[in-house]
Length: 55
Image (cartoon, rainbow, N blue to C red):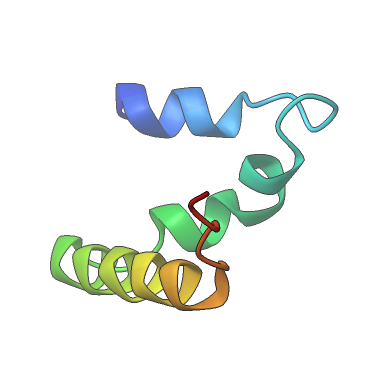
């Protein structure tokens, strides 16, 4: 297991619940599939996040 996978799999659900809940999705697939998934997840998060108002 690589260092990143080990770190993600050892995430404490009490302090990092989102990482612990989604670690299998983050680590699954081929490297190309993971990159595609990461970009899609980033874009979906950006699209779903309100833009803060500037005053």
